[in-house]
Amino acid sequence: MRSQDVPMAVPARTPPHVDPKALAAKLAAIQPQWPKSRYPVAPAERHIDCKRVKCVALTYDDGPGEYTGHLLDILAEYHAKATFFVVGQMVAADGPHNLRRMVSEGHEIGNHTWSHAQLTALSEAGIKGELSRTQQIVHYATGRWMTLMRPPYGATNQRVSAVARSKGLAQILWSLDTMDWRDRDSLVVTQRAIGAARGAVVLMHDIHPTTVQAAPKVLERLTAAGYTFVTLSEMYGKALTPGKEYFGDAELDHRVAGKGRASIRLRNTGS
Image (cartoon, rainbow, N blue to C red; front, side):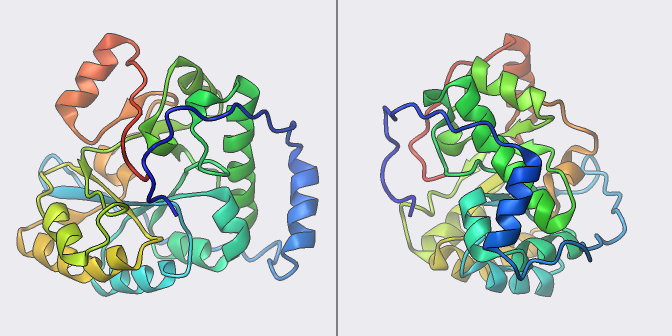
């Protein structure tokens, strides 16, 4: 699904203004099985000091999909928490069950746009539409508003940052890319993931079966190395600044913040 190289030019699209009430009505018609109440309840908040504990944040993009439920089973077996950056169209197709499991089992959900569009190629209205529609559908399914977003392909600029800021969304990039979208080999994915350093944000995709197949060994090896698996909010231990970019690398986070604004980083990745 995301196996091709990053497009260097994407035609600009400007989605129509999204009215929250109209969207909720449309979703109710499309997904009549989605109850409007009985939202999932998250477990008690954990207080983990990642300055004292070896933390790593596993992040999964582009779902939810047919393999997400199995991945959640594996994470539950290892008592591991992760962050899922979901695509709105995938949520609409998958339904609310996996998202509700994520909330009830203590995982974090982030916004990965509605259609996995390259945001830097869109107008301001287009960026708003991509983020707003996904905010709405996740809120409709879980009752929660996301506070994190990941720009597809890692492509961001001043315009993307400004819209993210207006939506209350911090921009989350990564410090370790497993390249699982390109190399569909669970052994290769495992070997790359277990190279995570303390405080790393590891990029993976729950739409690929080989990535899910790698999960038990990744969790086993990192657990043996003394790591604790945390959500991004747990790792940072504070509210993140909307619009700001975070990489999971304290030194890089500091350098990017010191520049005021980093240039566009169009990464050759399936994220």
